[in-house]
Image 1 (cartoon, rainbow, N blue to C red):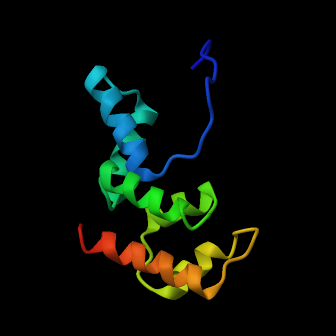
Image 2: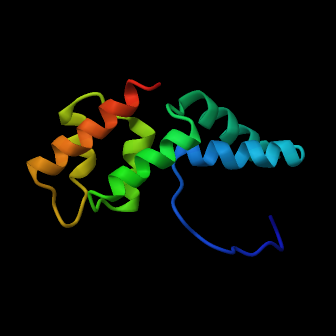
Image 3: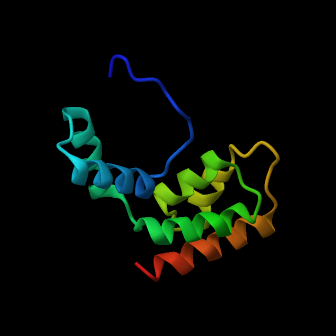
Length: 113
C-alpha cells in the first residue's frame, strides 16, 4: 500500500480483525492478502465481535495486558495449563486467583458459543 500512512497502531484479536475485514469486504473487493486474512479469521475465530468485546472488557478488569487478552481471545484455552502458558508472558506476574478468574470468564463465553 504505497502512499498510505499509518493512522494508529493497536493489537487486534481475530474476532476484531474479522469484523474489520467484513466491513472492508462490504465496501469493496478485498486484495489478495486481505482475502487470505479474511479466510483465516473466518475459519479460526471462535467468538463473534460483540461477545469478544464483552469478554475483553471483563479480562481488562483483571488488569491483563493487551497482547495477553488478544491471545486469550484468539486461543480460547480449554484448560488451566493452556491459560497459564498464555499468562506466563505477563510482565507483572499473575497469581492463582487471576488465573482462576480468567478461566471462569473463558468458560462462561465458551458455553455461549
